[in-house]
Length: 224
Image (cartoon, rainbow, N blue to C red; front, side):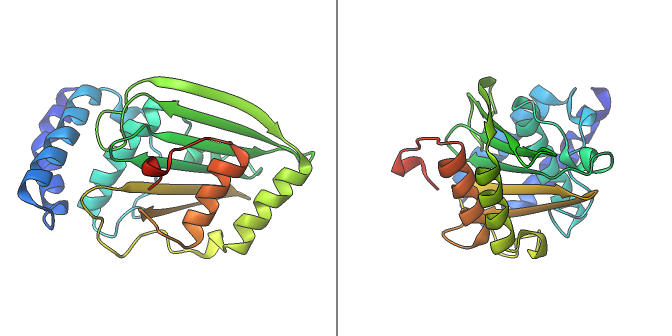
């Protein structure tokens, strides 16, 4: 805990740098909100490593900031590290994590089985993607048939997930949502992140997992 407290000035500087293009009030709001996350969860941050170095941002300080933010949310969702799993398992797994600034964080994970079916896990926490994550309020598990699993894999292949650039080149806006899709296949790990995608492969895969497989009913004004 003391070690993390000593790093807080470092994280604060990273965050302020990343929010440099935003308005002053918005910068202050997000800056203070994430610092609260760091303080409230400092003891658990070192326990889980979800992302390899350089997979979220080219700049090490930006990678550190994003990894810290995402780790808070993933821990609250009680999700495993797919990166760690990729070192031990050969079966395919995919996960969509949806971090909306003002709405509940969502995680949808698909773990393939040897018989061609897969397990679908849908989770949601009580907080907000841009603020404190809250606690787990939904944790549903079900089985996807072979046909459903094949349809999902076609969506992955059709959108060339494994060939997509992981790091987004555009600058995130003031409010929106981080779309994070991870995959594990034959010991390989891949993560792709996009900020509020209006179209494109990550939106297509995310919406398919959210609506067609998990069957979550999201109001139109919360879909971003």
